Image 1 (cartoon, helix red, strand yellow):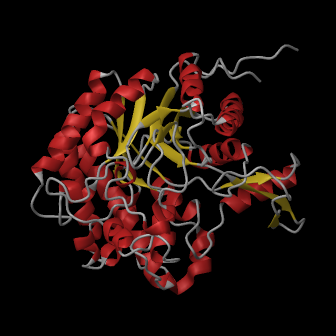
Image 2 (cartoon, one colour; image 1 turned 120 degrees about the vertical axis):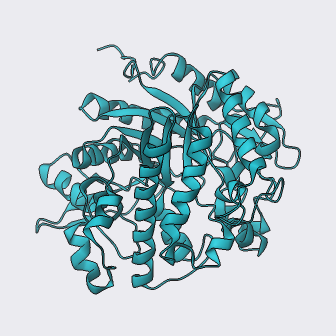
Image 3 (tube, one colour; image 1 turned 90 degrees about the vertical axis):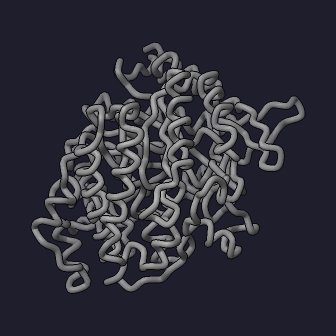
Length: 455
């Protein structure tokens, strides 16, 4: 049988994604207040002493970057808003210059026929609010809701697609448990569960604010990590084992169900409640109703996965990565099936349309002698993962779109500038941009709606 092109559904959404702290820079420009990441990096807690003070200088170069997206045929752009750029102390007085910046960015995108998809929180929590207890403060959900209302009132005449919160599992685990991300704390189990509950309440209140004040009909979702477990074989027992593993609730909060069950099903998972016991904060029916405010879609950030197999007794075991297996520059195993099984599991459990809101790879990229940036590993990685996403759609999973991480090489959190995820190479000293081979490859994928991907 001849090779077949992988054509995606006609209305499939193709795009790229970034986040404010990772690319904007201008950390103390035009009235912006400090975030937890400003303090964390200023204290030398990031690899090589790197900070996001300048990053990709997108704040000053956003028009150039919008031009790049237009040249690369990018039709949709997932960006985030910096909370302390809008509200320097986290609540109270509005920084109009911050809102003006996002106004201008949205206009620049639309002028180039690029649709904005806006994430309201991508980890840059205001430091002033952190000093008041951060996500442990019972007022934190209302702080977030106040900020969301201000942003949506300003931008919703032109923005229809909203994500409330990005990857709660990551900023809670690495920031409040392992202390390797901002704000660098090590909380008790009771405290981390309280913080996660407040994050969920913040999400629910944000959904209500968006629907209340949006000036155009909003489409609302959120973007947790999609923790993907893959069956070691196609046997029913191994598939069931993978599903069980993806439903797990470990105490470091690296979980699908602890965050998504309350949002989509209105309750915490029973397995988690049994495991955490008295450490779970008290909740009210009204709170759970707030958290489970109806969403239009589920965003999933998926990069890798873990193979599991049934142990034959209703449980499972994780399999080690084979020696010499393909890995990215982040040392993450290349597991393209993670996109298939992660999307399939979440669709079958929650029955909400899915967008892959982040997927991509850290690579060791540099400017070659010919002045170009050649990244064949990234092209191969993306082709593998998109092939598995296409397979999921063919098997009935309602996947509506794919946002590649990332447009630009950027500040990669606690790893600083040592990991390059971008379609566009950034020289962090000169800010010179060079579109990589993968950028042109992705342009063809978009232009052909996947037709350039051959099975």
